[in-house]
Image (cartoon, rainbow, N blue to C red; front, side, top):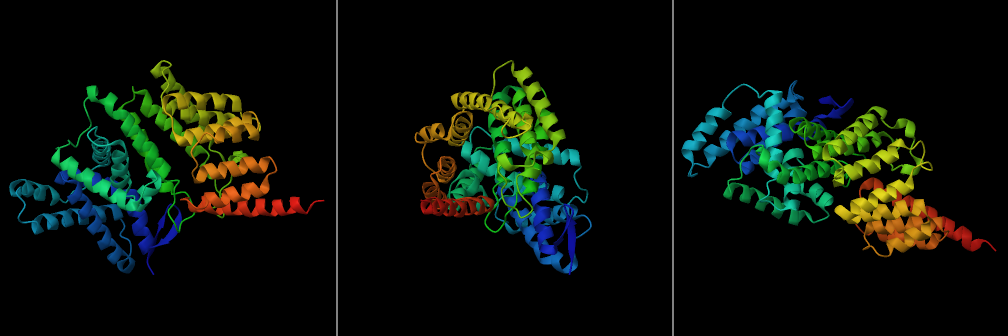
Length: 425
């Protein structure tokens, strides 16, 4: 049996392929896109290299340098694809591509980093619709499947596949450049780029069916890309705010799940497990970002400020819920969203009462998380039977595996409590 160590644990050959592709695939793809100038061709070559690894590594063992193996194989696969497509009208250009692909040296880390930043900005070009930018970046930067992307964007796998196909076609037809934009273009492009990085991190917390834990590799990659963007644009406040938000969010990750992979609510989390160094870095980045923007807060600064309030509190009860509520009000005034509105309801319930939260909740459109929040508020008022019914409704929609298990346990608990209450004289 062959295998490898990935992130400190033994994995089989097939698992090692998946882990390596998740970590290295986007880096290989970014450089290959620059080389061949064709997103679809590069994706096909990386996909064929992945299949070759899946067939070879479980038998021969994971190579000492898996990234190098995949890079060389992807180059060869790209050459094969170009040769197969002999009727292409760009034969002369393909000849230059083949020369570049035939090189034996591997790109340096600096070159790979630059290629990934070029890829970020290409995916986030203004000619593409906002949801398409995020979908394309999640696919090319992190190798997420259409099913995973659909879960993040709350759409269907079929719709996501069509969106990705149209995006590649538009990049080719519109000759969207593969480069970091000029300084005068950054203001229009940064919000989209920052949105992609935030969505990329969020994707790491949306495991697909059959998994139960946070995909740490995706989260780590999002933070690394945010650090690269911040290093590229140190005078811009928004990349700094995004990095602050991701650091503050990641700081609480060790306490979010128990040893069985089940959700631990913020109220029950062991704050001793929080990463103090990340919290300090996040708050420092937030303060720097606020100074740079001169009081003009953006959505990421406000979300980071909310995360900082939680990070500062020595306990759940000691949280400054009035300040959290104020920050959510500000956030909703400049960047309204259902997620922020739902989080504001929770803050209002903590700052005032569950009854206040229920009143505010009635003004929001129901979805699975809406039902889950209403269940918790009803339970705090002793209305356990209604709470159990709400959790049943919440399970009718999409949810991560840990969310599903958590809601099922809470539904069982509230059902038992409802029986106990009804049996009391």
